[in-house]
Image (spheres, rainbow, N blue to C red):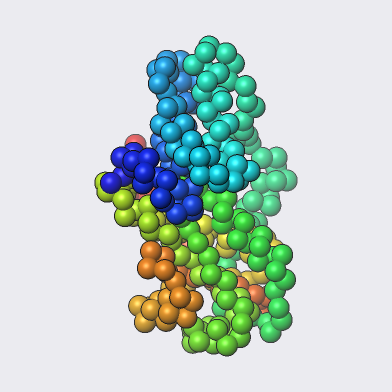
Length: 274
């Protein structure tokens, strides 16, 4: 069954990390999407608005699960804002919205987007953990379907592990970051979002991570495993069956200089413009 059909008993027995995903999804669909429409388009909220989110959050609290997770705090904050709107009060939040970058900032943005290139040869020197953490955190800021945040990481650093899963077309990278998905929420019937969203999420995370690696002066490349390698990774790390291995990035200090491939014009890629 989909997350909207889950019973209280099922929620009480659900693994904590899956329940956390379900809570975010329900708050996204039953509060967030309608709330901003009400604030900016004048739509009236029904008296029962927010009851679904309260049900899921009450299970979280009844189970004594951590209240200080930032995503759980975000859920409670949206409920508070909804109560203000229902009562005819000011929403009571500042919020953020896009604003144009300065000319200097745009130079940096263009340098990042247009300057990034795939690097496949690396120097034999370690990458500090704090830089890898910045890359991972950049991935976590990426857009993702229904705020479910189902992408998971495996960080390979041990030389023997890297050699075991080495792409012979590349040099041996100092770090390989494998991107996986937690598929449990997608196995609920009916599925909440389309299943293809899982792959879209991975691509979104990967793009953020590659740009951060480039900004840090590191060289990185996005590549894929074959089925045999995926089976090998699953066995090597003892992954549960609901974790799907999808793709990876290799990263390290760049050893090579590459000739940037010429891109076709966006005008050649536009099929329709009306």
